[in-house]
Length: 234
Image (cartoon, rainbow, N blue to C red; front, top):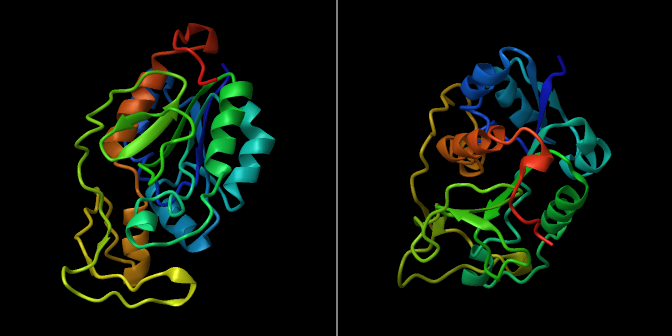
């Protein structure tokens, strides 16, 4: 029997992947494989500690998707969100939005025969391709997911500048960050990591495991592309 193969792009420490094993084992037993792509070796080492049975490849996720997407049944992609975040507008950071996000959505929607989910933050601009929204994140999927209010999503974890304080302008139009709200650990024990900056970074970039579990379960309900009744994005 052919293995059910999942591609987890921009994997980080695996926040999105944390709760996937139970539904996968229920449906496929041990006959499934998760391939994680992450470019930062330090983060890869953390991922491997949590998910030793996954295949982890240190490479560029965007290029890997282009070259290998046909080999998978389900693809999850969480491209970098920094250039899309509302922080850019709030702090006057003028830069190009990284169009890799939309390149991947178009590639998957047109050429991929499996199920996919591309995740990102709510941007400071109107999304160029219509997404679905769950809490503070947007999802581009070729199947329906559980959605939440678009008017009042939970507040996004971000650097908060204290009121009535002057922002210190840095090179390139950036501003020095203010106080940082506490970041939930999402069930990851990072006590062995001494680098506090790295800890904050990897947790901030995690997708909520409960949300990604819901999305995978929805995807597993559809066995072939022909079963998908939702219209394509284009």
